[in-house]
Length: 336
Ligand code: NAD
Image (cartoon, rainbow, N blue to C red):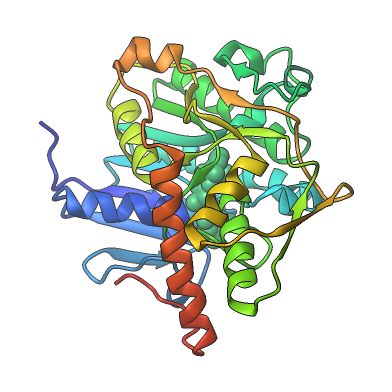
């Protein structure tokens, strides 16, 4: 049984996964939570009055020390990230997130933190293994020989290794999960950093609302991916943090779909059919990618299991609500 009064620090808490993780901690009865993000607190996706909310730039070492002070566990979700459109055009910015994790690890050491979680990504995998459209299932060993996604993926791979060396050399208990495309309510759905599921839901909603029944799809539409619903992600983080899994492990759904199938589902929820226009010059990432879940099954006898249909329907309805609120001039709906 965990002591739910000990201080849990969540960085990147103003964003999608960090905010959802704080919400889940509260739901499970944790009473001492520190949430940290660089964004002004009013801009956080989810914001809770009974949590210690700090606005800090974690690129800076002294701020990481403030964030980590007295922490029992740290979950580091803070990073510069977004969908392909963002990471292809912001490689230096994505690589600079190395400062956040490095300084957070040092601050964790200084504070004798019990455990440290790092949010890595499927973007660490070798690009050569993702050239076919047949949704190759990526095993953990497929990150090497290293040829990660330029910028964002290299930073994740480097920071994974930094976690490993802090564990091996200094005894800090680090845990690392490689998330595969996470989606769900309270995620980014407009503005340029949104990922495919949210972007497609939004485009379908825009088409429905404007009556202009067309959609622009990045790439050929036959690229394959898997998408993990946020509730599975939050549960997986918890299980991995409490486990003795020392090496980075996949945390993703193994239900692979094409981007066209993703559009099919969103159209079905909207009750419309759209003319599809494919933008072959847009950023589209690797051709195929899926999560091989043999290792997580072996260790935890568990894997993400929310179907894309059920998770995407909830996400579609949530984005629809946000879209209508924005149309009414109510710029954001924050869960408080
Ligand atoms: P997000 O962009 O919604 O949240 C990240 C948060 O980090 C943002 O709120 C941002 O303001 C904050 N941040 C950035 N720089 C900071 C700084 N210098 N100091 C303090 N806070 C800072 O992204 P997310 O989807 O919630 O992702 C969380 C983590 O999971 C990230 O590390 C991301 O790379 C990783 N990840 C996410 C996915 C996904 O599909 N969402 C997939 C793989 C990995």
